Image (cartoon, rainbow, N blue to C red; front, side, top):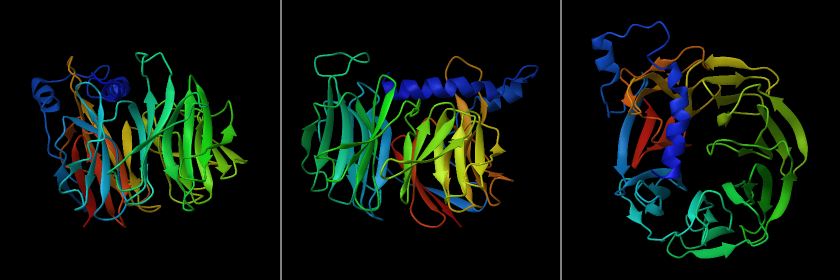
Length: 366
C-alpha cells in the first residue's frame, strides 16, 4: 500500500469513532445492512448539480490537480501499486487526459502551474536510501512548455522537502521546506531557480499534507503549533497570530480578511472578525470543497461508518446558504468519498471542480 493511501486510511480511521456504532447504540440488521452497503454514485445537495466530467486511465488516485484556464488542466496521479507518480494533461476541460510520461523516479510531493506553459513539481529523492527514514536530495522538476519537457533542479544546500508550492499574484513562488519537524517558508522571485529563506520559526508546523500555508492577497496564512495560524506579510514579517485552540488543521478558506472557515479534527470553525472569535458550524468529520461567499459553502461530511475490519465510511456533499447555520445534504451517501478527495478548485461563482480518485467532477449551483 502506498504511503498516501495509508496516511488517508489512518487519518480517517481515527475519526470513525463519530460513525454509526456509538456507545449504547443498538444497530439492527436492517441498519447494519444500510450503513455497510457500498454506494458509488455522487449525489448533490439541494440547489446544486454534480456531473462527472471525465476520468483518467490510471491505476491510482490524484495527489493534486490544477486548471490554468477553462480547458487546460494538469493532474498528478499516485499509483496504487508501487507508489510511483505520473502527470496527466487535459486540453478539453477534463473530458480526456493524456499521460505526459515524465517517468518521475523521485517521490513527488507538490505540483503548481503558473500558466499553461510553466509548471513545477517538488520531489523527495531517496536514491540509494530506502524510505521513510532518510533524506537525500531536495529536487524540483520544471517545465516551460506545458509539460512536454522537464528539467530537474537539485538544491544541494536544502535539507528537507519543498511542500505546497504556490505562486502569488505577482509571480513569486513560495513553498514550505520541511524536515524532521522543522519548517521554513521559502520564497523564489525567479520561478524556483533561486530561493530565499522567508520565515524561520519554531512555531511553524503541519501534521497533515492537506494544509501548511495559504496565500491570500499580500498575506501568508501559515499553520502553527498549538492550534494557531500565523498571518505573515510577503516579506516574512509577523502581522498577527490567530488562536484556534483546535488542531490539526485540515483545510482553510479565506473568504476575506474577516471571514475565515477552518476544518479541524471533528468540526468546522468559522470566524467573522479575522480570527478573534470562533463559532462551530459543524461537529462532524469533514473536508472542505470551498466557500463562494460568506453565506454559501460546500463540504464533504462523514455520516456513518460500517463496523467491519474493512475500512468503509459513508460520506456526502452538503451545502449551506446561511454561513453554516443550516446545511442541506445530498439524499444519499457515497462510500469512502473523502478518501478519494484530493483538492478542489473554484471555477467561477457557484462552480467547483474536484478530483475523487481518478475522476473529475463538477459541483455547480443550479
